[in-house]
Length: 120
Image 1 (cartoon, rainbow, N blue to C red):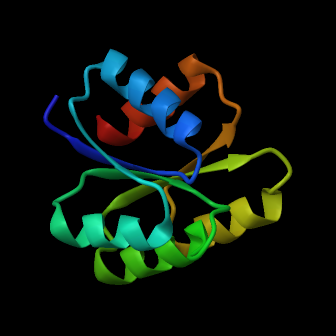
Image 2 (cartoon, rainbow, N blue to C red):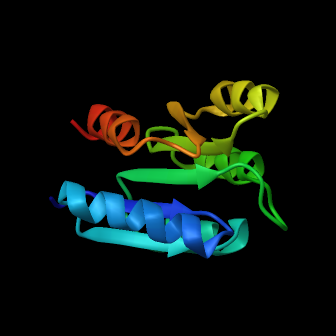
């Protein structure tokens, strides 16, 4: 599949889990960022189809990154990925332009369903 996806998460383990799942789904063009600043650089350098963005990160939060991305490219689909217990942050992300959210830890089937829905 030709879609270009960026994973943004400060946890290397989480990036690896998401990358492995996306690769198993057939996606080949996957970028990774470990923080918000790095994500914004990659966002500006690449023509992305989807961003999977953690909410809680050191430096710029996922919400701040989402707002900057949305200001520059409101059509880019951003899915927030967040731990359980951050319902208010998830609501804020949806209000800021996220198209969906995935709660960590996630079930592989649910993750795949959300990704397929937004890239179909």
